[in-house]
Amino acid sequence: MFAELLEEDFDLLHDQVDDLDYPAGAVVYHAGAHGDWLYTLRSGAIKLVRYSADGSQRILRILRPGDVCGLEALVRPAYDHTAISLAPLKLCRIPRAIVERLNRETPRLQKPLFERWYAALAEADAWLAELASGQGDVKTRVARLLLRLASDDRPGEVIRLSLEDIGAILGVAPESASRALGVLRRGKLLAQSDNRYYWRVDTEALAATLASHDQAA
Image (cartoon, rainbow, N blue to C red; front, side):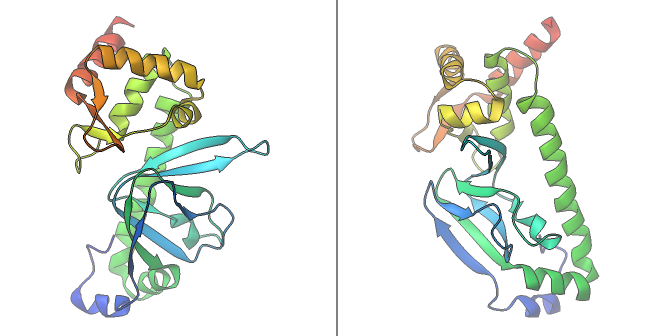
């Protein structure tokens, strides 16, 4: 986020940014909490969750290394979602007040901030179109989810999600998600990684399978 800044700009950041570690399953912040911080994700994965009145959850997005969470704190007083770690995290925690000051005093920050906004909105739109309300059988939608979770920092691996999390993302029953994963495992497209927080995925074969499915449809 600060790639456009010059050396003198970083004087405003001196001793203000914290490097934090979180275990898997930790809450980084709760929906409705005062948005005092922005976070950049260095490693791990975060799910952004919204809870309904009956306690059920809907996962709106999965954040991966390089993503920023809590951007809404720049335009409203509270966080929109609850952010929960899916794997051990390394985060940079940045005071909102510092980002606001840099935005006022350092126009160079405005472009990367807008780019982060746009990337978050585009990802949210794609998440909704391809996954939450996407067409196709459950296996196809699970395959699309796995490809969307792939990232350059861990080639051939994606964050391992619980059946409940997959159901909350796709709007399907956990049992349906389990059957779909079983099909992918038997097809040698999915396997457990050496790291228990990740799956090993043959992304090229999975993409080719989806392409063939789309052409047939």
